[in-house]
Image (cartoon, rainbow, N blue to C red):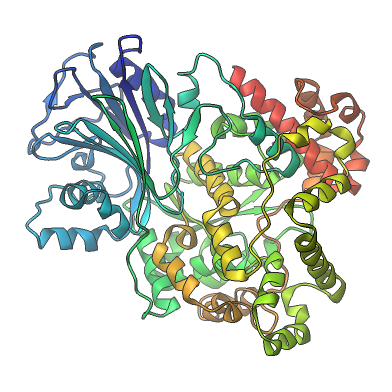
Length: 638
């Protein structure tokens, strides 16, 4: 896990490449505090030169490589790439980046982890390919040299990076299919630049303009990710998941291409075998590993499987859990159960209204406005992990989208299955966590949504929101065209897994963890073999006897307490948002008071009182978003 940057001059109007890369690297030190590196090309160059920067480690240029080390930072380079390293696998300098091949033709910078790299390395060695390190980075470099971008389809893991070919004069950006690791770019008439974070690219813009559609979607719905390509900033784009972007130095022409999805088909294996291997691969590291343990099924199962795989390491394992004083959302009881059952040490992080003071830090780290209190809760978990020396943390994100864990999926499943499964579900409705009235409301909402269509449904929903009177009508006019969710379960799950729902969770997972130099690993979200296994399970088998995520529940009985395996309540990673916002209202109103014109009736919001928000969670959520949006606008001006 690391931070990467690149800068390519198109003409003499652009800033010198190498000094710029040095400054870009400094902005990403939190993503890679262990070392840094940079290389560059001169105008006439067919070979790269490497340069030592402030944090370049000793011995960074292995002798077996034909590396030309520059003695000074030249202002004549036409292109440069930089890397900040968070050392996790192969801590030696043989894994230094930018990584060069033996001929000096290629350079690779890479952010992520390849969990099947040993298997891929063995396959390449059988073809006569030589290796000089134990890193997954070298496997990616040598695999690309053998097969080109097609090699990416064989990787099980998460990644974003760039490989430059000095001979062909091409720089190729690439990103994993689930979209776990971010990569952003800015293309102007004078230069092309890319980075792991938007704030690095913002500093290259003469003027920063907010994407109005993204702002409207955030204030209305709390979405910090609107599309896989657009960002919060005009002209700064995200490389879409599962794609490559190639730029030719000769003419600065850009070429986009979609990647083939992961090709590791192992559907003959059992779900338990695939999950155990996934967890085992993701625990592999040469640094301390921790676990996020919410008390729910998914994170508990990962922790339980890890404890069964490495029983001797259990006494040293740490599980980090967020708690709340509100019994309606607090999951301390189940957190204590899974910690006691596995024998790991539980680190409790209590979240309260006083944590609102950390919102400016959170916003600055993420370069995003916070959507809800759970963004802040996760930020504090990562703070605790860093304080305990943890560099890798496993999480349960993605299981709900693979195995139908949310109540919102039930109407699509009900439409999908036959009358026997419907009857069985209704007989065991209580197991879903819903009562009869709640189930009927859910079905009626789903049916009405489909009868009205996306546009009429959105208009109706907006009129019924309690914060509508605090919003100018033109704010809603900036919203994107609404789309109805897929009518059937399998399509709905894939849309959420590869779309904005899981994408926003992974967005915050990356920002919060990397702000604290922690690599977050999510077996359910970043293992495409596990995802293929989940897609192969028929819809009718994902929900049985009223229980969502039935295959995982059944499997989990061997690893976690039965009380967690068959929990009927679905809390998710939630906080008592309304109560916290009401208690922290002085913070919120001070920020809202500084809010510029953005389609919100600020004067009316400033008159709100805490007891009003405690009774209206929807309005409280809107107040929180307005406050953090104001902090965000102040942040990007600073």
